[in-house]
Image (cartoon, rainbow, N blue to C red; front, side, top):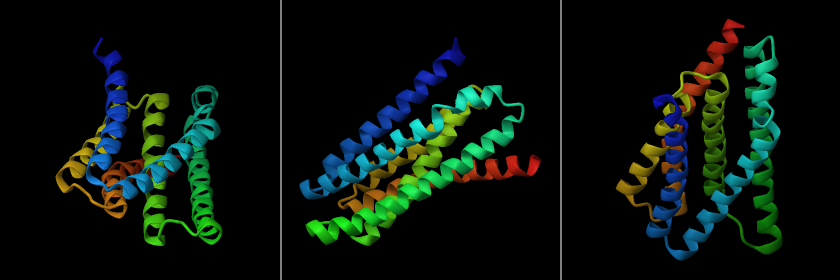
Amino acid sequence: MKNKLFPFLEQAIVSGGNFLTIMFCARFLRTVEQGHFLIAYSIYFGVLLFSIAAVYSALPIIYGKSKQDDNYLYSAFLLHVKLTGIVSILLLGSNSIAGFFIGSSFSYDIVILIVFFIILQQFSDFARRVSYVKAIGNNGALFYSSLTFIPRILLLYIFEPSSVFNVFVILNLASFFPVSILVFRMFNLKRKM
């Protein structure tokens, strides 16, 4: 029974963490900054949906049938890295185009923070989803979600960021540690192959 509760608890942390992230930003940011944050966060969710369609939907099916499971997992990780890189470059380019045609865009320091957030958060999400597929214990996804969202919410609450720049600095800091663990595990996986 306990093992069956882990996925529900993990999803509560992720959904609750996203809800609290948006709520704290709505509370601490001025109206214009809130709009900028929501645009950037929506871009992240768009990238997440793309990743679900391109990488995650096939992961449980192919991984379970592959005779070389770790090779497939590492290949899925590399595909994920490439797709995230391409989307990040497109984001940088579209920001420049928006600035040219409509005279409104994010400053480049904020765009770079948003790109890093998308990359880090995509890797964190990859770690969660792989934990379910690979069954890294029954609580691997809970481990990654807790390492990502609990520090994020605490940091937002403690520092009460007043700008989009500060929000994304906090979000990047909160995502860095779990992503470091994932990258370390992927490189160890590659060495074992």
